[in-house]
Every structure is written in C-alpha cells, then in structure tokens.
Length: 525
View 1 (spheres, rainbow, N blue to C red):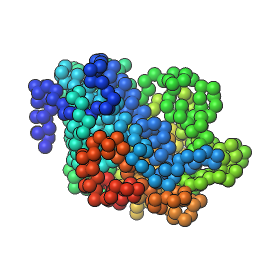
View 2: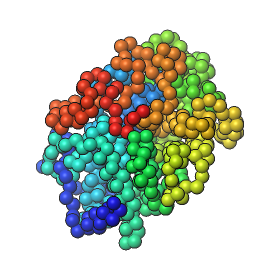
View 3: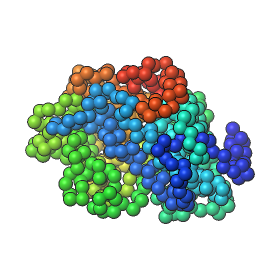
View 4: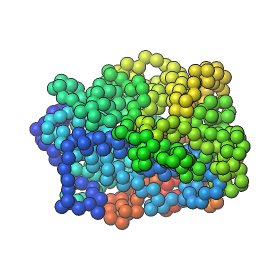
C-alpha cells in the first residue's frame, strides 16, 4: 500500500489536475467566476474550517449538539427549539452542516490544491488535503454516505453527485492524511515553503503541519476502533514528529469590540459591542446532566465555565432539556449561565482547531485499547495522558476566566471519585467521561461523536429529569439521543436518485425515526 501511495504522489507532478465533477450551488453563475491566488484562498478556507471546528456551521450547531449531549438546557422565557427538544427533526432543519462545507472550504481547498499542483508546490497540496480530510470526516460522521468522489472539482455544474460509501470514504481519508505527510516531506526536500501570513493555522511551519496531520489521523482511526479493530491496528503508524503538544488555534485577525469582526464564539455566546450579554447567552444555560456530573466530583470547571444565577447567586439551578417555565428557570433568575470560561475572556481571541486536551485523551484511549503509538514517539501510559488532559482542561478554562488553577487541579485530582476518576478496571470509561467534560465550549461535536460510538457518558434514566441527558419534552420521538442528522431537503429535491440510494442502503425507513436508527458505520455501540 505504501509503494502504491508513493507512486501515486509522484505521478501528480506529471498528471496535472483532473478533478471530478463539481457540486455547485444551483445559484452560482458559471459565467461570472473569479480567480485569486492560492495564498489568499487558503487564508479564507482556513478561517472557515477553524471556525466550523469550534462553533459548527453557525452558532445553532454548537447549541444543537450541546443540547443533545447534555451541556445546555433552554432557559425559561424563550420560545422555540421545539424540534431540538423533541428530536423531531425534518430535512429542512439544520442543513448548513451539509451544505456549507461543500460551498465554502471544500471548494476553496480544491482551488488551493489545484493551483499548488500546477506549480508543483507540495506544501500547499498537503495543507489542502489535511483540512479537506477533516471536513469530509465530519460530513460522514453526521450523514453516513456522502458526495465525495464527485463532490468538488472543476466547474461543470454537476448538481447530482453520487453518494460514496461512508467506510470507503474513511479509508480514502486515512490514505489522504498519509499522503499529506509525504507531500510535506517532499516540500522540505525541495525547499518549498508556505507563506506564514496566509497560513493562519500553521504559520507556514511544515513540521507543525505533520503533527497536525498525525493528530487528525489518530482521531479518524479511534472513531473506528470499536467497529474495525484490525484495520485501525494495521494503520496505527505515524510520522516520527509525533502529535501536537499544544492546542492548535487560528486567528484571521479578529478585531476587539468591532461588530462583525470579533471571535465568533464570543460574538454568539458572550457580549456584543455595547458590552451586553447576547441573546444566546440568555437562552442557553447549564444542563442538569452536566451539572450533576460536575457536582459528583466537586469539579472546579463548574465555576470556571459557568456563572451563578442572577438572583440566586448560586449554582444550584440547572436546566433540563425540556419545558422550562418556572420563574427560577429564567436567565434573569436562577438558571446557571455561560461564563467567559466558555465564550472567552476577550473579543479578539483565537478559535480552537483541535485542543491538546482532546489529543491527550485520544492518545490515552489508544493506549488503553492496546494500540502501539511508538512510531509517534509516545512513551507514557494511558493514565498519564488522561491526567495530562484533565490538567490541560482546567488550565484552559482558568486562563479564559483569569483564575489561577494550580491549587484547584491538585485538590481535584487528589479527591476525584466517581465516573470521571481513573479506573484501572475500565479506563475507557474514565477517559471518555473526562473528555466529555473537557469539550464544553470547545468541540461539542466530538463529544456527540464519542457518545454515539462508546455510550459514554451514560445518559441516565429518562424518568429522572433532574439528572438525565435525555429530553423530557412533550411528544419526543424516542427517549434516546439521535444517532445522526437527516439529509437536506435540497438534496432530496435535486439529487433524489443518489440520496435515496444512500438512504436505502441503511435499511431504515426515512421518517421521523430515521435519525434514531440509521447509525453511521462506526457506531456499533
């Protein structure tokens, strides 16, 4: 396989760009296209990619997965959210996670790669492949079979791309990340560089990009660890540069206290330019499930991430995912509110691409499952990486809130009990529980994916509405967190033959319960 991959990489120099069909927005005018440089396009693509990692395709996706996974409840006094709380989604709901990546960064990254191929610049080719691989992974994780081989390419206006098998897409993404490492090595051998001002994620550091590629490869492999152990084990090889050693962030030049130019997390969940808390900050409060988990182990992240009720001045009143109409449920009364530990202490701070906390927990899980990470230079134990993830998480939230955390960390680890404590007999449980706590405000989607593949954290008895993750809203589809999203209505209208073929493959009727039963291939929990 490696010989074939290396041969394929070298052939790119001679083959030129021969992209597949382009999946275009039907409103795009092919007679009014513009051109740019790969450097400028890369900057825009990296901005779109980075922001999507932390906040999703819009603030609504951060809230959607935050609600389903037990981070957020809906404050009293606010209407709406009915489809989220009832799990009764339609194909017209939340389409942006499907549509936007294809229309935005995937198209831009294909442009970057095509331009780089024409110039023979391996470095830009590698970055484009790394970022597109991560983007396609999330599309698979959300929808299963997706447009891939015919999704982006030239500009011939194909609006009916075939849907590729989800597992086969995953296989190709792993190979693409491996090829990116080869590209980066070839770039170094040929003294090729990336303009550091255009590369707002990696700063033009090719060794750093190899660490990023290794880390994203570890993520995609661990996603499949329960479904394809042999495959995962055989592909657990990495460049010797290893994994990231600090969080990967990006900042395209956010401007302090300037409308439309501030950090998007702060803009959505923090304060506006007048210093007033946003409507989203008032709508979404601490969920009872996460609150119970915090309190079961005296977790300092309760007060690092959240603010006490306005009138109650305490952290006692969290919110269920359901109907919250009592006076104390209101944002201005007793509901526990998002604080700067979540939305950030400054309006112009970085967005998170992938955190060191997630990376530590990925390494810990891989070691706990018996995978060999020696090729990446990993020498520690699963417990050591688990603890490093806990420490990094508390430090992260403390820094955002401006709180010294050394004593908090020592006290927490010395007295840690319960599900989030280290358990030699069930280390995977310990790792995923702590990873779940560490993803609050950082990457809700990863927590959602981990829950689907591992069953952790356990959602609790749906009848225990003071502690359960499950919604108790009227007429819920089922007392269960959904396992996927529905395909967008636009695809059903325009690309019905291909999308219906993908639906038929699942063996599940496409109705309101489709999101409860049509699991992604790696979800064997």
